[in-house]
Structure formats: C-alpha cells, structure tokens
Length: 97
Image (tube, rainbow, N blue to C red):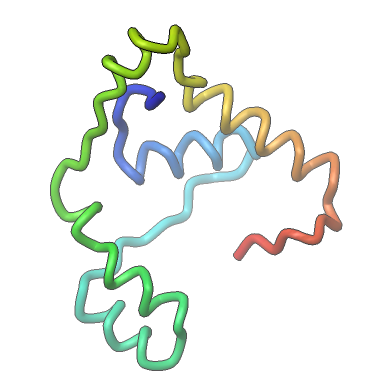
C-alpha cells in the first residue's frame, strides 16, 4: 500500500518538524551530484535513481488495497514513529547521515 504522494521537501519538512529542528535542506542538480558521485559511491547510486525525483512518480495502490483490505500507514505516523525510535535509541547501529 502507498499513502498519498508528497514531495521530498514536504517529507523533509515533516521529519525536521517531528525532530524539533529547523528545516535546513538544499537542492542539488544532476551535475553536482554526478561530480560528487565520482568520490562517493552512495551518491553515484542517487544519480541513477534521479528519474524518480525529476517528475511526479506516483504509486496507486488502490487495487492492492481493495484485494487485500490493507491501508497504507500515513506518512505522518511513519515519521513520528521513526523519529521516536531514533530519539529512544540515540546510539543505534543504524547511521543516519
């Protein structure tokens, strides 16, 4: 199941708000990411997936929801629970950059 679509900026704003932090993000274009990808393999992978962020990429799970009776978790709930986890486990093995 997939919740209603939102932009990456909207998602970042939700995360920062839930974490009680001011929103601090910058957009980088394909050129800067390609240059950064020369030195960082993780960024190189982002360049390959940019098509998902350059124009609307919307999933429709209505057929799945109808067939299996499942609904997507709201983005707000997912962000709230994720931020709460990291606040409760500040030395988690998962590293967040």
